[in-house]
Amino acid sequence: GSLVSSPVAATVRYSGPLLDFGNVIVLEPEAGYLLIIAGLGTVFTRTGDIPGEGDPLGLIAGDPLPTSGIDGGQSRRETLYLEIRQNQQPVDPVDWFANDKD
Image (tube, rainbow, N blue to C red; front, side, top):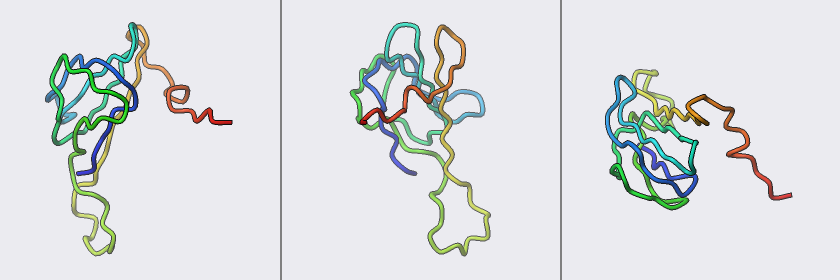
C-alpha cells in the first residue's frame, strides 16, 4: 500500500485495529483536537509515540489503483479515512489542510 505520513507533529493516542476500519491511528496534535486516520494495513507507530510532521505512520490497506486498467475492478482499492475532532465533535478539515502560501 501507499505510505501515509503525519500531516502535523502529534502524540499517538491509539494505534491498532478498530472494528471494521482496519488499523487506525489517533493523533492528538494539540489539546482538544484529534486526527483519526483509518484504513491502514500496516502501522509503524505505537500509542505514546510523537511523530513529527512528515514522519511515516503506516501503509494504506488494499492495492494501489492499476495503471493498466486490466484488473476488471476486482481488487480492493486503497481507501484512507480521515476525521478531525475538536472537543469530541467532528469538524471540517479544510482549515487544517488549507494552503496559506499566498
